[in-house]
Length: 489
Ligand code: HEM
Ligand SMILES: [Cu+2]
Image 1 (tube, rainbow, N blue to C red):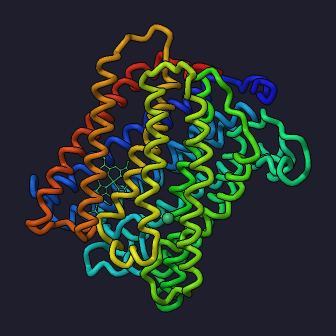
Image 2 (spheres, rainbow, N blue to C red; image 1 turned 120 degrees about the vertical axis):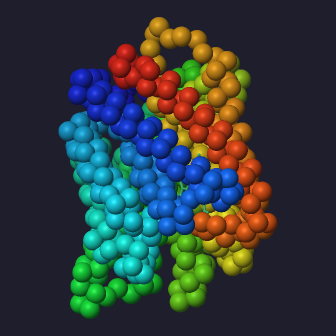
Image 3 (spheres, protein in one colour; image 1 turned 120 degrees about the horizontal axis):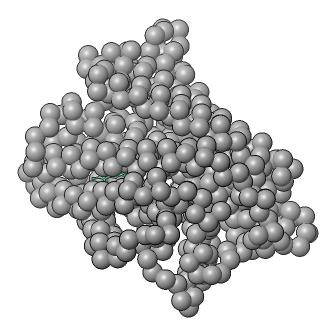
């Protein structure tokens, strides 16, 4: 692996401080958004009383906040590891952060001062049809905030593209395709981080551009409703293409932590092979083609698009997921790995990602979707791979980069809170899925008496997740100033 490394990236205070900003902010936002999530579950379980309009504000802030911070946090993982191989610009990474903060402030203002509550999916025409609850300005503020966040990400990906092209000449070589099609002998040292980053920059640039188009159209439509009209089906296609690609790209960025960190624990390098490269190549297209699984109920969609959505959903989940999970298991098997908090989280992320894909695939089946659509099954499946797949990667990364030599041993606390997080998540996810199976609708502020017990059990799970996360947060913040954040560079 060393062969591929550049002479070490300058580990200036600027780059460590920027990473520090990313890690601390991301963890805090994640925690606050979890509190919003827990509050919703407490409300649905009739344990506390929250007015419905406030519930929908919480739903909006939780969805937008979680998806946004998942993207930002994951981008810091990609930046951190990718800059070992290509020369990334720290200033642009910082600009992305600043634009993100501006966007967040606009979104918070729109929701909590402007009463905007049309959910993070801002599905046209809902933002414009508030029935008097929020103004056009509040809607524009929310949409504008998302747009600014998107601009930050686009700049970041532009810099990634520049840096990758400088080192690898083209994206084809960066993805390792010359080993598949060019007849070149495979270079096992080709970094998985570069393959993954190249795929992500392609899909997420397209995804964010689609998002930007519909956001701008929606903002114009708010102020010039007669001049700018939007075809609702087109709007939905663009919106879900963006939303689907963006959240998937987060996982594909964060998984780089598994490729880079697990080898350190097992003392075995993560070598690429042709299957690995094929899987990432294949997923580049699949992940973009599957988005119609969000439109399976839209009878106006051409049937072939929905069929593609279903078939690709079956196929998309597998390639990268399997080469990664299989790679992780072979790396760990009989390696004598030391199981500490970080390695456990990394391994848990493999389980969460794989297992969470199963209910996702079930829901992407047209005949099932007719029944499960808009039930709690949907938050059930995505909380599965986000809470147990994505977040463990983010926590493991943060714990890893903030390690210090003189560390206090907190093994027992680690175990208690890791368990709290793991079992709490399983309860939270399980109750979502079981409610979904009983056709309990999603996004309802008030639940019928029959549904309340399940929401109350969920509230217990949510509390356990919050406590586990609080522990990770405190542990990381306590040592982030001492750590150089270049622990292993
Ligand atoms: C303590 C942890 C969490 C709790 C208690 C929680 C709770 C909830 C609840 C109650 C809902 C609304 C369910 C409904 O439709 O009735 C929800 C929706 C959602 N959550 Fe979470 N959540 C948590 C963590 C996360 C994480 C880590 C992410 C992403 C990284 C996330 C992303 C979302 C998204 C995207 C929605 C959909 C919002 C919408 O329907 O517009 N959540 N969550
Ligand atoms: Cu999707």
